[in-house]
Image (cartoon, helix red, strand yellow):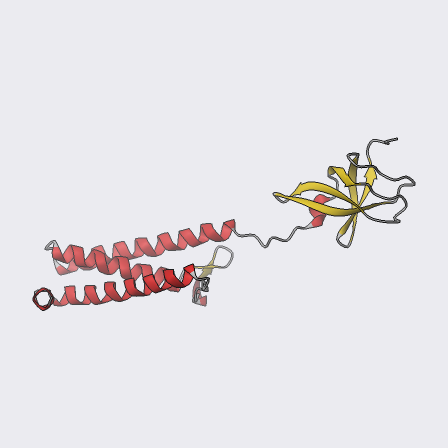
Length: 187
């Protein structure tokens, strides 16, 4: 091992130390991510695209790991020092940007999980549990809302009970309950 180390140039020593250190940090980050410790220390100087930070620990680690190993390969292949540094910088910047793009896509897939009932107003749905007349009790409707199948409490101002499977229109909100009116005046 010492023969190998002694056979490296000064640039190769630097590239190896940077690459090995960054790779170790990358492995630690992956292990922590697997156990639920996914907070990434964003550097606030460059928030772009709705809060996605370009400079994160993960992207910087990828820059140094990929850049360092690419520099090692280029130096081992006999490239001149200036070309080795350019290759390492290009590879590192590419990895840096790809990690940024990956996390940008991941954040697009996230959602708060909250359903906004305002999006239900005006929709026609089917009654799941009959709805008592004159706001005297709650029934239930089911619908797809914001790409989720959900069951929602419902009331009506009508003078008659709205039966199961009857079609209703959602006309207003009362807290977490929707107010509906009958579309087909069932018997």
